[in-house]
Image (cartoon, rainbow, N blue to C red; front, side, top):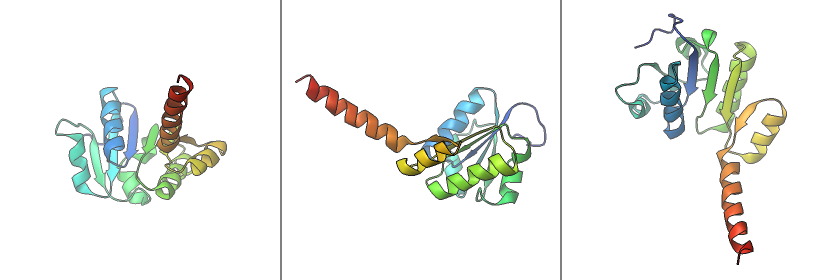
Length: 146
């Protein structure tokens, strides 16, 4: 288990250990990052598997003690991917503004919100917009060929 006070390598925090968050955490770890994962439900950490070498922190990512336990003060990157847009955006703002994390990426499910936050300078990923684009383009390109 990684001790977040070690400072051995680049440190990333992933908030949310669902399908997306757990996969991002594992990929970052494979890429040589020290990774801490935050989730409110302890059982969510099972998605990481037994070989995960990072740390897991059970708690709410808007709780400063939880962020500190995950090593927010030395984090170079934070990925926020819970299922709640409001939580995600506020958590991303805390990481950016309070702790000065240089790379903060936030998943926002609502396309209108994602666009607004992107215009405000936040790095957003909106899987809903991506799905709309791919599904629409697939149908439009198929029907154009008919």
